[in-house]
Image 1 (cartoon, rainbow, N blue to C red):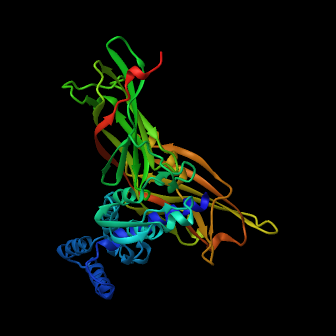
Image 2 (image 1 turned 30 degrees about the vertical axis):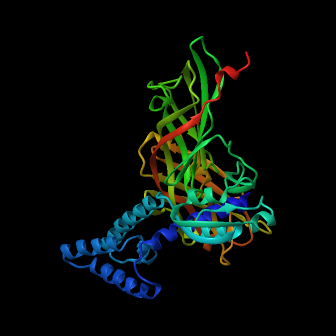
Image 3 (image 1 turned 180 degrees about the vertical axis):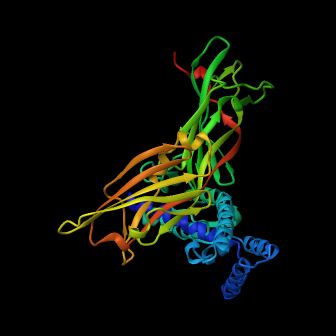
Length: 442
């Protein structure tokens, strides 16, 4: 399970790299030219002319997120003004990359291919991890004729599904998993909106409310692309309505006026909303369901590195909309066979909204590790302690125990999404079946 979670986040980071590269309009052979442009612009940032400095910032910004790996760390720049300018450019480019990562990933693929080949190609093109561990070798070898041209990820997944294969998120690992059989009610109605798949189950009767009305309810599932990290779902029931077929009336939810917030936890890539309506007689067979929900999404996860743990105290790193500061570093031991270390961090987001303060638990699921001289990662096996929450920031102390050598010269890495953003998702689903309320047994 830990390996699956690690794999999912590694691929998410790889996708961000693909996002950066998508900005490049040149071949690999032209990369030295890009480096030369970056170096020339950085040199111009030190010009005594204000106009020249402003132009250099504009040049770097227009080059796009592809230059992010080429920007030097601030501590390697001698000029304070150049450091400030580079920081401003980096923030703008990281914000652009994070916003781009919210766009739906696309797939172009054609031919007679096996399920295994299709899955591998979809993963390569989108950065989304798809688990096939539950499929047999026979199912993986099954061939499909596909013709996808700049189609969304969820369209590609729909093409993969059949009578004996379906896709769904594993509740334990959070991985999108292809599994045998059908996991979706055939009578459900499905729609795709960019990076999201929306599935509404048939309306089920909950009993007769009175002689004129019956209470019916449905569950609507919203599935995000696996590379995205939704934090919580928010919606107002008054924003939804039901229009029974053949009826000019529009029905409001039974609990109209309620404000609902649903935290999604660590592995959550799927949100569910449940709504009930009073259906008047005569009962329609189908209906159109519409409304709007908001998802708070953490986008563009990036590793934030601190070189040499013993020099990291009071050092801050900023990526996009997040600032990570190492407040304290402590070393314990060594014991006869091991060393211990603790790192106290402050994580601050540019989101002065109640969303961050009400649902901070996701912060505790960000990946943290030390990197030894051999490149091996060591997680906080001693756990963590929350020392402060509020005002758009948290202070957390991580404990690393039984390290094989002195970690003073090891690197410390904190992996964080660089942008928290609300995504509004409009929902319109037509032809949702209504199970006959008269079938309910009294």
